[in-house]
Length: 276
Image (cartoon, rainbow, N blue to C red):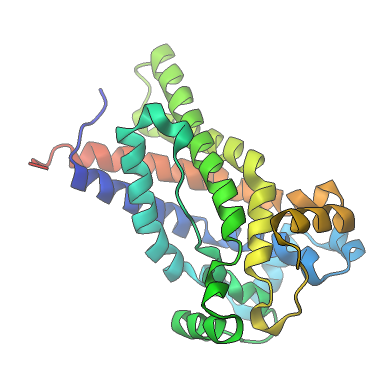
């Protein structure tokens, strides 16, 4: 029996679930971004030498374990309302999932520290905000918006659609299974499907967001399609999936945790009387 909650409870459950999932997988998210942007300023022939564990060890040795959560405060500030609205729309407009389109632009400040490597260029959220506006103008905060709009709509539609389809089929076949475990498994599978389909667009978005960050030279000067073409020409088709392995490491637990947390909070909050 699906838990029914009011508007406030739905928003609260969705926001907390999104923020919690992102926090749990922040180390893997940072590794994913790092791999995505390596091709911008690196010799492509040297990229075959890098690995997830080697990069993780480098971060720990150079910056400490807490470095994996750099920018997580910005992510949480973004993820709370973002996930709240997404889950609210998911609950109320499931039939229209394929047409959902929301704007996500967390990456510019949150991932800007990855352009620094051995030097500290941004000293916190507000310093990063001020520096980006000073060096790149206010519109620098919206770099990669075209790729974001292109990717986030299909990403949400695929994720929620796959999750709902798998969960409905599972509950039909095995109605006695734990709701928490069903949500965790179906959420993980929906994350894999969504990431596989939209990863190239996310990679292009990330690189466009980091253009000129930390004083780096510009690489992509021809817009969204030109960036796609440049990556394919310089790195091959595989370049569009650089970092997909840590992405899978991230979404399998991450998306599963989000849906599991959301369904659990819904059950807990459904017992609280509401007039909304």
